[in-house]
Length: 103
Image 1 (spheres, rainbow, N blue to C red):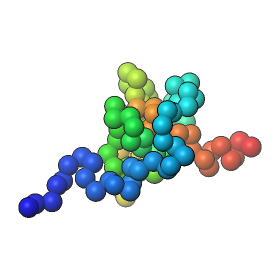
Image 2 (tube, rainbow, N blue to C red):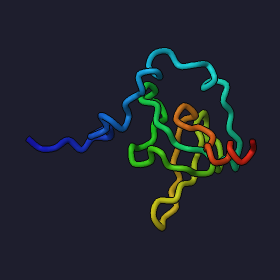
Image 3 (cartoon, helix red, strand yellow):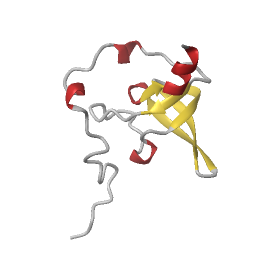
């Protein structure tokens, strides 16, 4: 039998939630708002399928360039190339490096 090469293939540990993060999500993910120019980390929430980026972008950091509907376009560097990723806000978090610089 051939290996599956689907969108979520071989993501058993990559998209697994920590035991304390399972269940109902806190409401702060609804109240989050991002602006153009914000530096964000892509952290895939496996409980939300809408607007999920590809697994290769898990943990990457990029800059929000614009908003497209309810999603955001994030500019990411992958090797020498620059990629634009369309990603829902449930899968984005402000970068920790930016938060540490503010404090």
